[in-house]
Length: 260
Image (cartoon, rainbow, N blue to C red; front, side, top):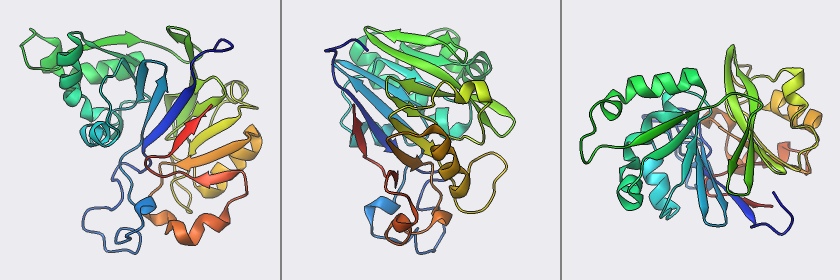
C-alpha cells in the first residue's frame, strides 16, 4: 500500500470450525455458553479498504455474516480452498449481483475453481435471470493481486497434504486451516506485524494446527500481535483459557476488527 493510502480494516466474520460453535446436538459447556465469544460462525474475513470490500471465503454462514456486518457491497471473494465450510455459501452472492449488475469476481487456485464450477454448475451453464453470477479468476501461490492500490499476496499453505492459500495484506496475514508451511512460504510472512492463524483445539490433528503448534508457529513468525481462529468447541471456554496465551497472542472471536 502506498504512503497515505486508505486505512485497512479486517473483520473476522467467523472464527469457528466446519461445524461452527455451538455444534448441533452438543451439550458441552462451550456449546451452552452465553458468552458471545464462545459462539462462532464458520471461518471468514472481510477486508475493507477505502470503498473496497473483499471477502476471504464464503462458507455456509455467508448470508448471516453479510447481514450481521451490514455489508452493502462486495467487490471480490478470495478463496483459501474448496472445502464446503469455505465455499458453499456463494449462492447467496445474488443480491450483490443484482445491486452491482455484474458478476462476482472470485479468485481461486485452478483446482478450487474447478470444484466451484462443479458444485455450482447451474451458474456456469446458460445464464438464467435470478441465479448467481460468478467470474472465476485463476491464481497461484506467490502471486500479487491488485485491487486499485491495494496489494494482496497469496501465500502457500499446507492443509495436511492439501496445498491451499493464505493471504498477506500489507502488514497483516490471514491463514486458516493450516497444518504447516514450506520454508520458502514461511519466509514470505516472517516479521509480519499482525497474524491471524488457526488453532483447532489442544489435541494433535492431521490437517490443522493445535494450540501448541499454533503458538510455536507464532513464535517462528514473530508478529507484534497474533490472533488464533478456526477454534472448535473442544478448545474450551474463552473465560477459562484466555490466560493460557502469551501477552501478544489472543483468541479471536466473531466481529473482531483489526486496523492497520
